[in-house]
Amino acid sequence: MRTNLMVALVAMLTLTSTPPVLAEPWPQFRGPNATGISPDDNLPTEWSKTTGLKWKAALPGRGVSSPIVYGDRVFVTCSSGVRDDKLHILSFDAHTGRLQWQRTLQATGSTVAHKKTCMAANTPVADATGVYVLFASGDCAAFDNDGTLRWYRSLVGDYPGITNQVGMAASPVLVGDRLIVPMDNAGTSFLAALDTKYGKNVWKVERPREINWVTPLLRTVGSTTEILLDGPSGLTAYDAATGQKRWSSQLTRGSIPTGVLDGQKLYMPIGGVTAFQLTDTGVAEKPLLTAKDVRPGMPSPLVYRGKVFAANDNGIVMCADAKTGKTLYSERLKGAFSASPVAGDGKVYFLNETGICTVVDATAETFEILAVNELGEETLGTPAIAHRRLYIRTDKALYAIGK
Image (tube, rainbow, N blue to C red):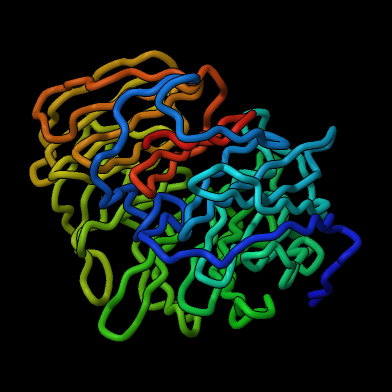
């Protein structure tokens, strides 16, 4: 296995920075516990490209990954270049928008992908020590909070059988001192736990050779942390400590949107959105409910304030009762959706692909729009919420919206 640092591939830019102040973070794809929900109040409702902004920062390339927030830092990835082979990770001050540092890697794997996506598709994940990035080219790295490279892995170099002609987008997650890396693809597929200090394999298990964009979920059962990874062959739970398979279910099969945990209920984008009761040993055979009219496209569903919300690539936003599956509304809005809806402060934010964000009242039983806000730039990444602000990345800039 090659774990060389490949320093020649990294462009180092030394900038002064301070350690992060620990606050309620949005450290991964869809934030705390991967729910897409923020506990913040006083979140913004109205803004435009010139009003309601705390700051705006230019980005060196496009990306469909989400920004993440840990303490007083915002991390975001981009990719650029004729072959989309320049891989960027940037750290910004969450309050001022000051660029703290930027690093660039050279892609070592294939950069072929569907025109809608790019190599900056996987959302990074952060902890108190720094940030971990995975790109669709199979390049994986860890940086400390000052931007110093801690380790680098060319996963395609280690496992040349990895291949995907449409792009990869499943995001890594953290379990203690282990980085959980999902690498489902048309070739050599696996789920691996990397030691966060050195980037070496702690364990690695084979996965079906299937294209899959689903990000793992985590749940605790007694003293065990389970990694739940859905895919075209079904849902499998792995022991985070050993990688051993604990159980599997073919009741749930997905490939693009990620489900959401609400306690021991698992809401999956199947047949609309179907809720399953989880037990210590798997998934109860009989679904709790099916919200058949809530049909996500690429965005992941959201469970908030007793309701299930979703959006799809036909520009339709949907809502159902989370206990009964009864449809509350289905409304067509302008444009298509790739970003997953996020929520907080009694509001749901639906961000479409052209930068239009429709803010909906989450407490209402009917469809009530609070505001429609336009940035006028391509926007495929899911927003982050922290510090009572929304952080939205477009193909050109990173916006901090709110007071």
